[in-house]
Length: 310
Image 1 (cartoon, rainbow, N blue to C red):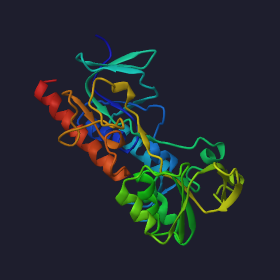
Image 2: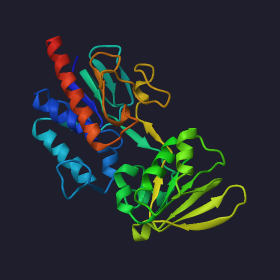
Image 3: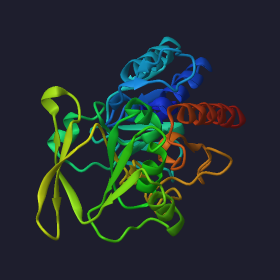
Image 4: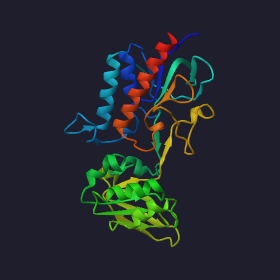
């Protein structure tokens, strides 16, 4: 069988690059498949202030590029390619990229999770410039300002409540009149004097891509049809994330939302297959925690190969 690699890593965010660095330094010559979102969510972020070692902060794309260069210096190889399907029932594992199939003795899944967006062109143009899916990443930048949160579940309530640490006012916008959030999370947001609720309301546009900043949202009430502009300095999406794990359906355990289930930190139910970063972490979703689990997955892959005598 041709094209067998000791380690294949799916994904090129913080988890994937860290796994690549550690396995490359172990002389395992990892192959990193960069996926449909090279660099992961950090590549959509502007200033990152909470990654240790950068007292003045660092731009998200620059941090990702530094990680890539560091792993490459030790021999990690990178290949653009979107994984169509996998077969984890055979050894070595088969990873189908459509035009070619790569085989791996160990597989590290660092494919991440994609934020759910509204899908507006203006929203997409302003990601990293006032539109964000991560309150803990970007909330600080809007201290003393009025901001909006979109959503009606626990993640939206959590984002809105967290953002009141910085904002003077948080407007929580939800398309329905009922909220999916748990009672305790909803009450926590409702009892916060800085949070204002707008139910039965959708965002139709985000101003102003021409200024490269968020200045207002165009809103429409679904029951009355009223359309108006809400001045705001930022829009945070709290409508959840979609783990990029569909290529493992029926082969690996997932929770009800599709996140890969791991035991002992990064082990999946298939020996030699490890999951790290946002594809298995629905709780923290931080660059530093993704990097940490990427390290763990790399060390476990190295130990697995040693035990197999490979």
